[in-house]
Image 1 (tube, rainbow, N blue to C red):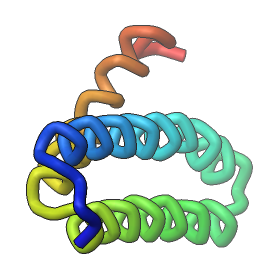
Image 2 (cartoon, helix red, strand yellow):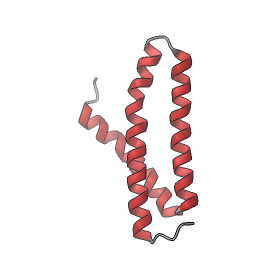
Image 3 (cartoon, rainbow, N blue to C red):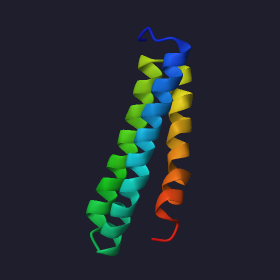
Length: 92
């Protein structure tokens, strides 16, 4: 575990989780376009890649920084979705 205080774990976790969430939920539209275009293989590969990146990032937060970073990372990940929907509109 890296020697970061609780405040550092919270800030790093929230930041990493939010950036991860932005990437994950923003790339969802690309994934939907691939499915709509009939490229199901590419869409499934992209979906699996998105999930793998999210899981790997959260596992790294937990292993390197601890529980507080993991929980704040998950919170940041979940906060990113409604903010993206609000910014870009639910109907695109």
